[in-house]
Image 1 (cartoon, one colour):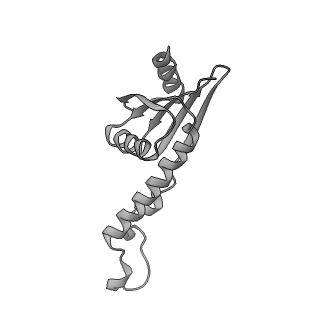
Image 2 (tube, rainbow, N blue to C red):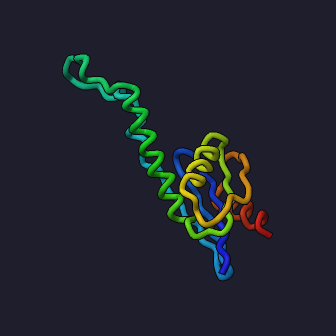
Image 3 (cartoon, rainbow, N blue to C red):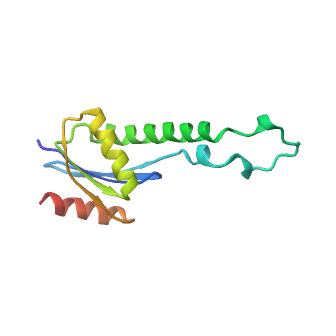
Length: 133
């Protein structure tokens, strides 16, 4: 049985289309890291700020990248058995995800990578179906 996958991914969510001989599955994976990337100054506290109340920007960026890495790993778990992978999405996210796929050395190969804008889940599914026909 052959398994082909298509992934539309950006830094907030991923839509994974898994095509097999018998069926087609559509999965949505959300990145819940928005709280980590918000600047600490958005919440107004009632006390006077000291220099220790602020989070160092580098630490915040490392935390956001760790959340992003976990998000990419969740997506990879869905497509780890795929023979062929199509990656869609904004340029920056697709490049990061392609590097993550290459570093994990999955069974399948990256069939193609396309930069596309926001699409609905059904448009993504149709795009993936058309690509593999």
